[in-house]
Length: 406
Image 1 (cartoon, one colour):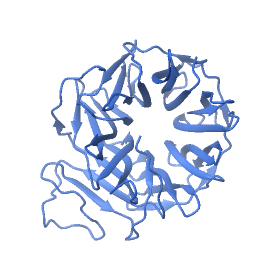
Image 2 (cartoon, rainbow, N blue to C red):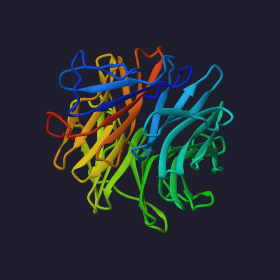
Image 3 (cartoon, one colour):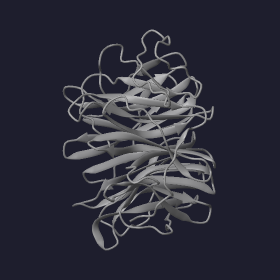
Image 4 (cartoon, rainbow, N blue to C red):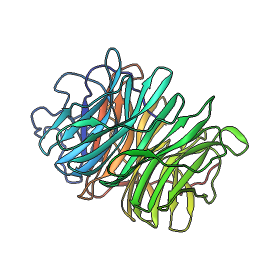
């Protein structure tokens, strides 16, 4: 996963919007303070640098959409002595940095979820050298404040994802270390008053991690991740869990193969869910799995090397997006793929610098999507946080027929 986080200063965000009707010809007027980073006849991506000329760096990992004038993005940035959480907010007019608490150590925000304008959650981890603790903050409409969270691990407890179904019903997942090198799934629930740990199914593995979660109702939630085992100690296998209102249960996967990790999950309906991740082949393939209400089935990349997929969002059963990154020669390029109801296709995406990648994606209320990630010139250079916005009808790039695992 593209997660380079060594950087200094405040995060710089490059807001990128794609519009089918945009006029991006050379010489077209631009609003003061904007800078066109990519300008091609077909892609029509417009990038806006809002670093205020400071050249600051940072990484964006997650976002939450409340309404068109209320959008949050978050991530982490490094100062001279530690890494800290960073939050940016769009109020319909401008993006602003919003202060937030930080843990006593290196603070990473991994995911966000919003109920409404005064009820937004973000989860992550505070690394403290040889130990790690869960980290949760809440936006109450005025400020971010830290909320106590369970830490069952002897030395490590981490949160990877969060989903809020209501103000008194939310889930966060991750994993914790229990003696030696035993990693177990971590599931916690918000009941409107506090976060508490909920038992996870027993997984016969020395390392079982939960990395994504989504909730459809109080009795219907899904979590995804990976585990090592099934005869191969260091080979990942896809992990899927379901909440039925009473308990979390493991769910089998049709035509599942070894070497797959799942990072994110989304739902168009209770009978139409998508999970994405990575198949560890050479080169890597994006792994996509679908729930039709009866069973999970596996689909693999539709191109030879589309790399890992780290975020997915469903607008409808015929409009689903997933994002990640892939290798092109020595460079990393963002991957954006779209489901039109019958097939997955590649969609052109921005590449403002040599190395680029997306970490998450979310739908908005107007039928568009927002994605976040980072971009940098080389592995040793500063990163720029990326926000990508798409509206209109996607222009698909022809790809091969979906392939199964080699």
